[in-house]
Image (cartoon, rainbow, N blue to C red; front, top):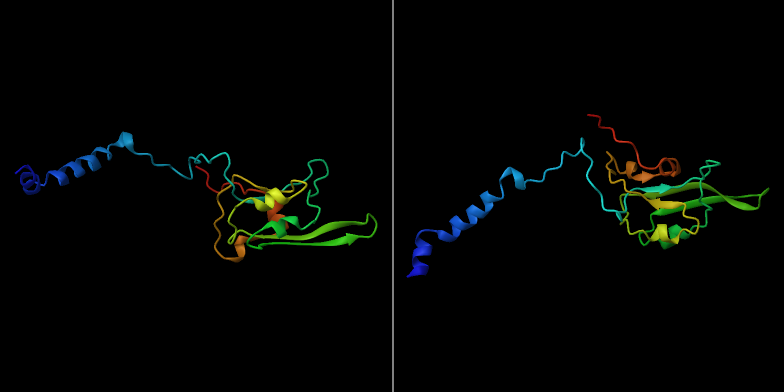
Length: 151
């Protein structure tokens, strides 16, 4: 009999609606005002890549060893270099990183022996074209871009 009355008077539906409307109260809402207020990112978040530079000389720390490209499971890093005849060392000529295919796993960062490549906390990687997702050496050395939104 009790089950029949619950079915007739739609008690389960009313209880479900009460729970739904209870959580619609403004004190339970957690909306972020994104461009004005920056969201908190987890400490271990891996986002946009950056090539670190030596603060004293301003030159990149990358020694063109190609270990990051070999460690990348997606094969999206391309490193090319030339040998300097005076110093007998390889010098980095081009470094490209395709962020559209990157899984942000951090294997390239771990493989770098001189900590030249780093995955930063920046999460704004949107671009208007696929070519904008392929970052060259200059973009990687600049690091995270400043926010365009000013309020």
